[in-house]
Length: 100
Image (cartoon, rainbow, N blue to C red; front, side, top):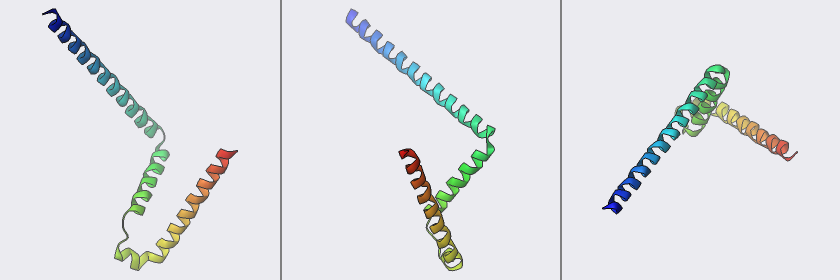
């Protein structure tokens, strides 16, 4: 009988510990979200640049339509080439900066 009570007590204690751990982690996640939102509202230009970067990445991932290819294909190809070159130059500059 004492063994059963002890096992129930252990399970209850583990449940309480797990619940407390979940509460702590959730509280930390909420705080990080609040901090991120605060940073975003403090610096709207950073938010704008982040949105533009996400838009550019999504645009590059989407397939090219026939309309785009017919109407703005050469211009798009030129811009993509320039973007690739700029990214490559940025990566090389960052690597060089990291080496020194």
